[in-house]
Image 1 (tube, one colour):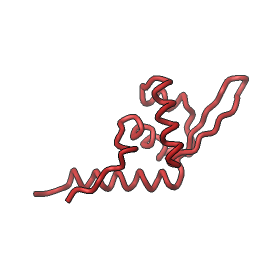
Image 2: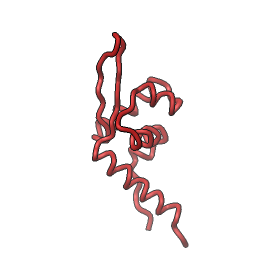
Image 3: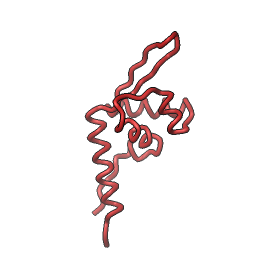
Image 4: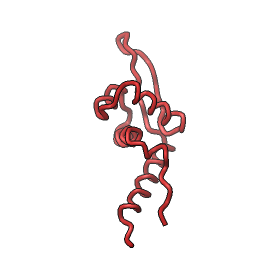
Length: 96
């Protein structure tokens, strides 16, 4: 029997963001933008969805009079990501 995948993480861009955040302490918005190749508007929307779910924390401040947004994965986000990876691995390794 196949387990359900987390629909929040099943989006390609949200999964990319989480995959980047799982391996760093924090990441700036510009880093996520460059690594994913997404538009500013699209990545902003996806970051908000992840934040609203409690998967990431977002801090907004200024550096040299320019806005600086940083993201950090939360323990809830780590747990959700690890569960997603385990479930998708079960899909891949499923034998008839």
